[in-house]
Image (cartoon, rainbow, N blue to C red; front, side, top):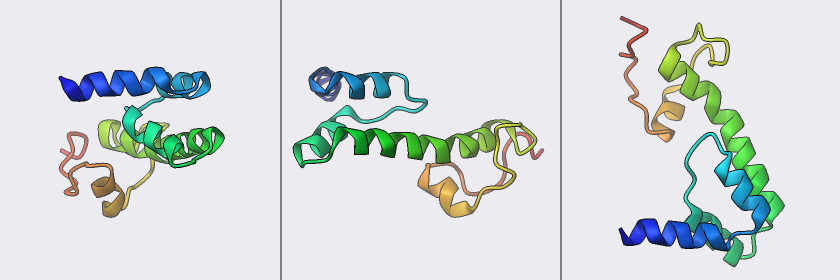
Length: 98
């Protein structure tokens, strides 16, 4: 329970533009990690750009895993290292293969 409270506390202390970005993000982001990056001197615009870049790269991979390569928003294929990076099973035994 303490970790969740820390997440909310960190989220509440973030600049409004960053809170809006995280609230509308396609994926869960760790608010404590974002707050630590700010504490270390990262610029808000740079963090937002990194979030958007990661989501731009990740969304076609997620669509590939969940819906298959025929989905309009999915990647045609995904390298095993990207599946591993995003914590997906590396073996290609997805429902749409069967």
